[in-house]
Amino acid sequence: MDTDVLIVGAGPTGLMLANQLARRGVRCQIIDRHAGPALQTRALGVQARTLEIYSHLGLADRALELGKRGTGANLWAQGRKMARVPLGEAGVGVTPYPFILILGQDDNERIMGERLRDWPMSVQWNTELVELKQMTDHVAATLKLPGGATRTATAAWIAGCDGAHSAVRELNGIGFPGAPYEHVFFVADTEATGTMVPDEVNVYLWQEGFHLLFPMRGKDHWRIVGIVPPDLRNTDGLEFPAVMPSLRKEAGTSLSIKSCSWFSTYRIHHRRAARFRDRRCFLLGDAAHIHSPVGAQGMNTGLQDAYNLAWKLTLVVQGNADVALLDSYEQERVPIAQRLLNTTDRGFRLAVSDSPIAGLFRTKILARIGAFAMSIKRVQAWAFRIVSQTGIHYRWSSLSRSLGRMPEDAPRGGDRFPWLKLKLAAGGPVEDLYQKIDDMRLHLIVIGQSAPATVGGAGFIDVHAIPADPVNDAELASARIPGTSYYLLRPDGHIGLCGIHLEPGDVEKYLSERLRLGTAPKARA
Ligand SMILES: Cc1cc2nc3c(=O)[nH]c(=O)nc-3n(C[C@H](O)[C@H](O)[C@H](O)COP(=O)(O)OP(=O)(O)OC[C@H]3O[C@@H](n4cnc5c(N)ncnc54)[C@H](O)[C@@H]3O)c2cc1C
Image 1 (cartoon, rainbow, N blue to C red):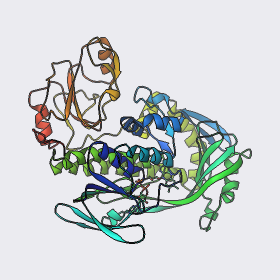
Image 2: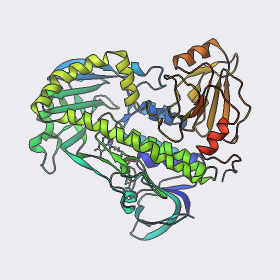
Image 3: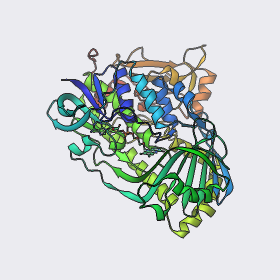
Image 4: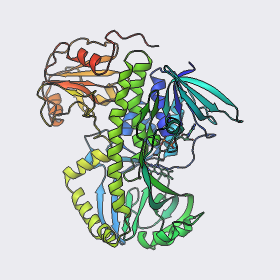
C-alpha cells in the first residue's frame, strides 16, 4: 500500500485534514491538480470554532496576526445607518475568540500549507485524480502527473477534498442534488473610501438586493460582495466598472474606489452530496456541500468536516478502533450540512429576492427588526453560537451518551464541551481548560467525586479530577455543569459520554460499544 490516506485536493479542507492526520502520525499523501496554491482571497471569514482548532494546531496566533478582528456590523438602508450590531460581546466567555476574524482563504491555505512542512509533508501539485477503483481492502487511484503520464497509487482510504466538481464524488457515482440560484454574485477586492465604518463589516441593504463591505488587511482595503444587477446578469466578461453605478447608488456617492485588485463573478449553487461516504472514500468540504456565502460558513464547515474525520480515521488506521467508528462521520456531518443549507438558503432568498415586497421588507423592516433583535442579549448570544459554529453539536450521534439524570440545561453528549477556566490542581493557578487539553487524546473530567487513576483505553485517555474550590464551583455553575458529574471528551472537544455518578465500567463500556476501541490498544503504527 502506497499510503494509508490519499487526500485529493489541497484547498482549506484538504490542508486541514493533512495537518490533522500527519500530526497524529498517520501515513498520508495530499495531491492537487493545480500547479500551486490559489491566489484569490475567496472566503474571508474565520469563525471562532475554527480558531479554537487552529489553536491546537499552533496556528491561532499566526492567523490573529495576519487577520482583522470584525468587532461590529453596521446596517445601512437607503443611505442611512440603521444600526450597529456588536459582533464580539455576545461571545465573551463562550470562546477565547469572541469575534469573526477577517482573513482571506489564501492566507488560511498558506499558514496551513506552511504548518504541513513541520510533520514533514508537502502537497504534490500538478497531480490529478482521474480514475479510482474500490477494492475490499484498498482503493487504486489513477493519478495524472505533470506532463500527462499516469501512475496508480494504492491507499487504504481516500478523502475527497476536491471541491464542488469533486472527482471522488463523481467517480463513486454519488449524486449532488440541488440547484443554482438565478442571481450572479460579484466579489471585488478594492482600495476604497466612503461612508463605511472603518474596521467593521458594513451591510448596505437596498430595494434590489444588498452590498457587503468587509474590512481587509491594509489601509482602506475592502472586500465588496454584491449581486450583479439583473440587466447585466448575462453579460460576458463583466468588469468591475459595470457594477459601480448600482454600488454607488446604495453605498453612497461618496464611495471612491482607488483600485480593484481582484474582481470575479460567480453563480451560487446549493447542493448536498447524497452520501458523504462510499466504502473507502469520504467526501468533505465543498465536495460534500455548497451553499450561499450568507454567514461566512463555507470554508469553516469544510475545516470542521476534516477535524471530525481525522481523529476517527487515525484510530482506525492505527488499528485501535473498529472500522465501524467511521460510520459516525457521515452520521454527524450530514445533518450539519443539511441544516446549513436550509438556513443559508432561507437567509439568502430573503436577501436577494427581486420582489418589490421583499425589497421593502429588506430596507424598511429587516434592518429595524434586525437591529432591535440584536439589541437583546439572549438573541445576540444565540446568533453568536450559530454563526461562530461553537453551538454545533452531535446530540443525535451514536457516539453521544448522557447517563443518569442530567439537568435539562447541562451540557450533554454530543455538545462541544464549554470553554472553562478552572483550578486543575488544588491550590494551583486558574488555567484555561482548552489550553490544557490535548486534542490528540480523550479526556475524562471528573467533578465532585473521586476519580479513577486510569480508565480502560488508558493509552488514549487523560483523567482530570477537578478539585473542590469556590472558583471552580462558580465557573462550573455558570456553564450549568452539575457539581457532581463526569464528562468524557472526544479528541475534537465534543462530549462523548457524560453522567452524574461515575460507575465502574461505564467509560469502558462506552469505549468498546460506542467508540469501538479495543480495551488493550495496540501500539501506534
Ligand atoms: C469567488 C468565490 C468567493 C467565495 N467567497 C466565500 C466567502 O465569502 N465565504 C465562504 O465561506 N466561502 C466562500 N467561497 C467558498 C469557499 O471558497 C469554499 O467553501 C472553500 O474553498 C471550500 O474549500 P475546499 O477545500 O472544500 O474546496 P476548494 O477550495 O474548492 O479546493 C478543492 C481543491 O481540489 C483540487 N482538485 C479538484 N479536483 C481535483 C482532482 N481531480 N485531483 C486533484 N485535485 C483536485 C482543486 O484544484 C482545489 O485546489 C467562495 C468561493 C468563490 C469561488
